[in-house]
Image 1 (cartoon, helix red, strand yellow):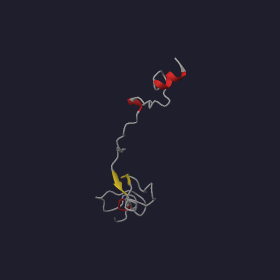
Image 2 (image 1 turned 90 degrees about the horizontal axis):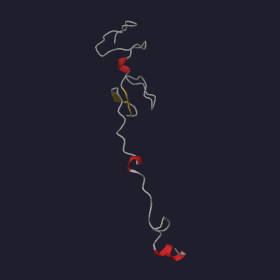
Image 3 (image 1 turned 180 degrees about the vertical axis):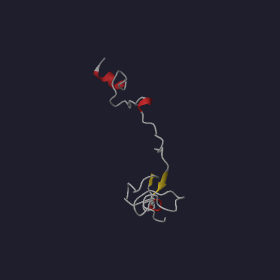
Length: 93
């Protein structure tokens, strides 16, 4: 094969330079879209920054705002929505 026959054949003898050829990645290696992360726990929106956070947390991990204020007593004990008094200190809800 002469030097110029390579150019006449547009590089189809193993060359990929200038022939418009490019190698595509295999299908299994291409990144597939991932479904959004779904927590196994219930979520709520932070009342301050509106970020989605887990329902059982006391503070928002994005802005630091205290959430679920109504579910805590002044002493810091957890209260359920049906409690009328704190079982830790006896304070009225």
